[in-house]
Length: 260
Ligand code: GLP
Image: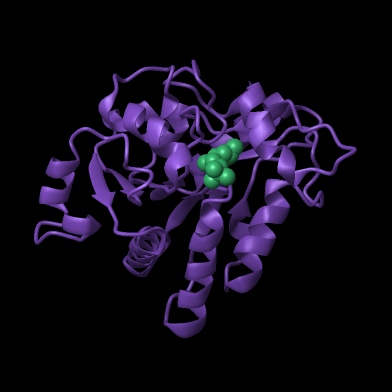
């Protein structure tokens, strides 16, 4: 796992945006796996800026989002469909017909899950999967004890995840109990994984993911099994790591080496 510890929150966001931009510029038909959550908002803002101010184009990209709440329609303001439209899609030149999110309002969520996996395969697989991390070590909505071989399916959310995400729902609404999420196995199939984690609330999960055992108790630790996984951190998110001296020695302040 490549561990990049950046000097500041902004530097971590910029580093991640530049890596995504280089990936998109470097291939003819990139297939991006996309993530949601508060951490990704400044990142998408930065990508939109790169699109406005440089030659960065998303016209040839396909995208697959990690997850969506069950029972929530795409036009619900707290849906991840709405999030993606507002945070990224409407600011860049992406072809919306090539953007895919699981439909949480599907009549049959099991059929929807299978069809989502089939759509990823039909696109040739994900070339770069962007990830955030939950405070309990979840990736996508793969809560602790998710099978490390799991595929897209329905997951019951933990109370801590529901509490963290309740802010996005109205005071009279019940935060969703279930989500459709790519599985850990689906995520591991991506040819490259790129995680952005910032802030002290993620420090314990980040330490468990990078330096703890590979365990379904911390689903993000499955990234230790991935041949091309990069984790971009600010100093707060890196605060629980023991081998910081080594990571800084290899990539001072998260910068590239001549071997990258
Ligand atoms: C959400 C999403 C994840 C995200 C995580 C962290 O529940 N399903 O994909 O990485 O929680 O969110 P945040 O960046 O808001 O802390």
